[in-house]
Amino acid sequence: MKNGSTSVAVKDLSLSFGAVSVLKTLNLDVHEGEFLVLLGPSGCGKSTLLNCIAGLLDVSGGQIFINGKNVTWEEPKDRGIGMVFQSYALYPQMTVQKNLSFGLQVAGMSKAEIAQRVARAAEILQIEPLLTRKPSELSGGQRQRVAIGRALVRDVDVFLFDEPLSNLDAKLRGELRVEIKRLHQRLGNTMLYVTHDQIEAMTLADRIAVMKGGVIQQLDAPQAIYSRPVNRFVAGFIGSPGMNFLDGRVETNSAPAFKADGVSVDLSRYDFTVGDGIERTVQFGVRPEHIEIGDAAAALPCNDEVEVDIVEPMGSDTLVWTRYGGQTLTIRADSDKAPKVGARIRIGFDPARASVFDSQSGDRL
Image 1: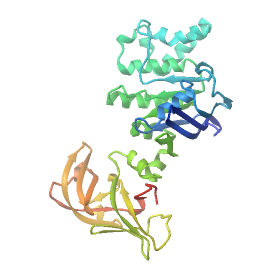
Image 2: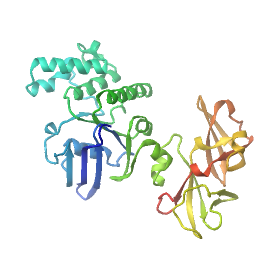
Image 3: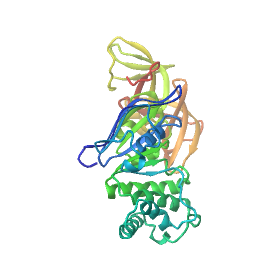
Image 4: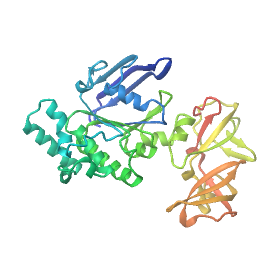
């Protein structure tokens, strides 16, 4: 990020299709030079929000500002944005060079300026050897680079990415993810990026806006969302494998504790926002990677003995499935130390790193 000034501002934005409300009085400020990711499941409104910012959808209420200018009713071409879609949307009969330059020619730009911008984009994206090829001669990753280049030649302050990697295989996604991050570091432009892939969000974003039902649930840095999710939905959406959730109750008498079917977890190290003398039903969340096994577990504040049900080798890691408090618990263990099925092992974790959510509201306590 640059100086902290606002690049894109969304104020009380609403969008409805008939009786269906898709976005609900949504507010969002994107800092200048920030890489902000809109993350959420299908149908949460993330692509709809991006299309509203791009001017591809007319809003029902609210305003959109880009670099201080009210663009709520401006045409997309007048908003100072470059957009990259999930589909490459390249002209099949044109070469890569023509695909990159066509929009600039239509805008009446000089040949010298067009050549300079195309050459710069091709150099940044490392597609110089591809300029004479047609899209049918390119791989999926190369086509997506060209699609990014087509936005890049516009030389705008704000780039919008709508799930640009979802059509690629896992290896290509990983490679292009690095390229997009490198591109942002080099250019320093504001970038808004839509994805349903939480790994993409965690690795790319300066901040993540987690969305559900047209509402931003949490807007924060990736590590803050991972460590202190504001509600059960965010906690379950971030993390791979997902967070463990144990149903039980919290008692905040002399010594606060989580209790469930023969299990009592001391919560004196947990930062509570509830008063003393309260008992309520909760879901206790602990991430698989925060649970230790063996000798390391014995040194942690909460530890117990369990039996291994299932072992899933994942390469460098192994997922260990067991039962704790009468419920399923997943542990992410080092493959070199993975136990056998049926073995009795000691597990341990620090409750200060856990999350406790109210069973009814889903909010973090």
